[in-house]
Each structure stands twice: as C-alpha cells, then as structure tokens.
Image 1 (tube, rainbow, N blue to C red):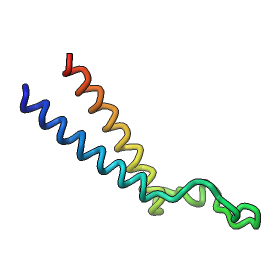
Image 2 (image 1 turned 120 degrees about the vertical axis):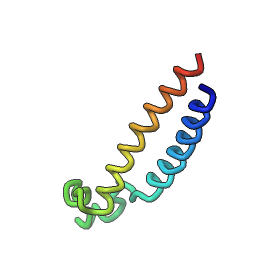
Image 3 (image 1 turned 135 degrees about the vertical axis):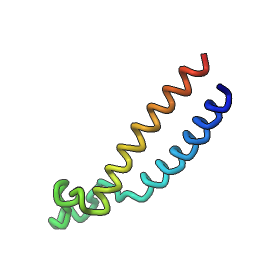
Image 4 (image 1 turned 180 degrees about the vertical axis):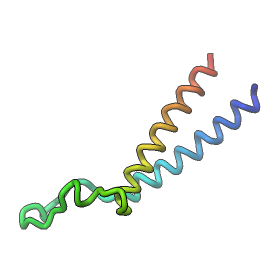
Length: 79
C-alpha cells in the first residue's frame, strides 16, 4: 500500500508542475489598451479548439480535474 501511495504522490507532483507550466504559457485575458481602439479579440475567435490557446485551455481543464481527483485520493488515504 505504501508503494501505491508513493506512486500517487510522484504523479501528483508531476501533474502540479505540468499544470503550472501550462497556466504560465497561456496569454492574459485582459485586453489592456487594445480594447479602446477595437483591437481586442473576441472570446470565440481566440479560443477555438484548433488554436494553440484553445488547446492550452483544454489541457488546463484536464490537468485541474486530474489534480483534484488525485488530491482527493491522497487525502482519503491519509486517514
């Protein structure tokens, strides 16, 4: 049982690092001064599934779900 807990902990750390990198790779959602001149992109034009930004958003969602599930499993195993 200790081996399984150790493996889960290592996977949890790897997911944490990957999640941090994916979040930092994303662009900011604030339009800044570009919104004043009309240069801001719309949400649908920027986050299509085929774009790099869309794939990063999807990867973030998947990693967050994996992070939360694994955190719950590790927490239940601590009792």
